Length: 186
Image 1: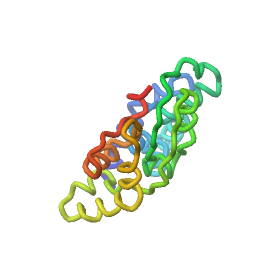
Image 2 (image 1 turned 30 degrees about the horizontal axis):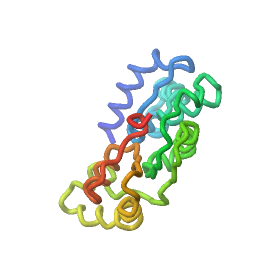
Image 3 (image 1 turned 180 degrees about the horizontal axis):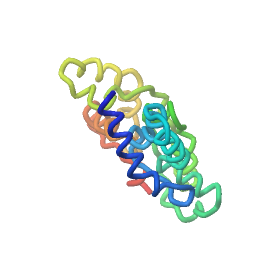
Image 4 (image 1 turned 120 degrees about the horizontal axis):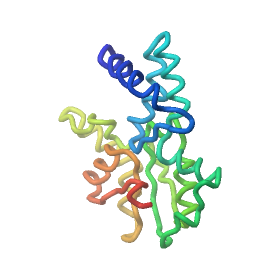
């Protein structure tokens, strides 16, 4: 907890004068970027907490940012269109808990893709949890509940999409299939 607070203090001091509505903080890894919105305002006090809350209001996942750009029409759906592809989407735990998968699905729809959300919970990796010897079996069993079977039964040309780094590793380790990040797809 003390180490997390130190990182929060350092990051808030670094970013407080840089992040604003006109210069938002955008991240591609849900667990990392959503820490600015969820944990930092809770960890800090006084002026740093106030600054953390201001940063949190202007912090977005890449999916949220792009969906907002579409909504405001600063980004046109025609600028995203690629060939129509079948996509299975696994949502990162932090993204589902602290944000939403709706922006991801909105972007994929606007880009002309046929996307389906996998009704999975956690992939089982949970950061480095699944790499720890004593948790490996539990991690793989969690992946086998819904995620791995859905990925395995996908047609060969279906793209597997997952925003979390650990989720993509877990999918590869559990199914042998490479999952991509939405930024790679776009």
